Image 1 (cartoon, rainbow, N blue to C red):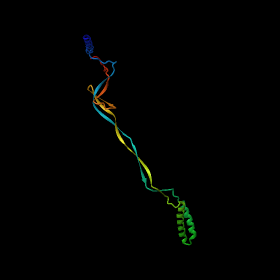
Image 2: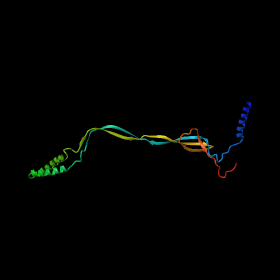
Image 3: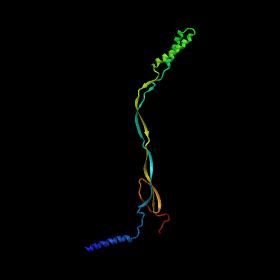
Image 4: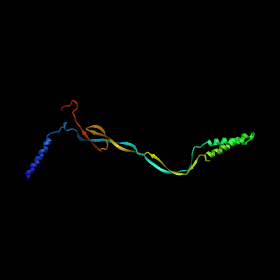
Length: 185
């Protein structure tokens, strides 16, 4: 029983020691990019302003008012003035004829206007009523749309925009390739 444990322990030691003695592992083109962590230097929120207007309505009582019922017609006054003037001319004599003509024309104009416009002065009274009034009110607010992140990797400072706050460190994808004129060290 002790021999089995001893063989297992020696096998384990040899397998892990072999990997340690193999030396550093170099990335090849087949390995592709790898992930690492970089220190975040700053993470500044990016804000967007937006408006969500709301409609506010209320009711109020409007006082009574006069409203024009129809367009005022002057044809009755003109026709009444002509008829009244002709009648006044027939009634008057001598120098009073001119005064009677003027008085007849004025009286005829007033009577003709009242007949043509139904005796109203061109306005109708409207009773008080309740009306609804509305208006749109701006409702501005801001929301965070992302974060402007500055980070440090291998002594170099980089920047990016992320949709979240990464915290103290950020994962980076590293791709290594040979520089122009590269060769062995």
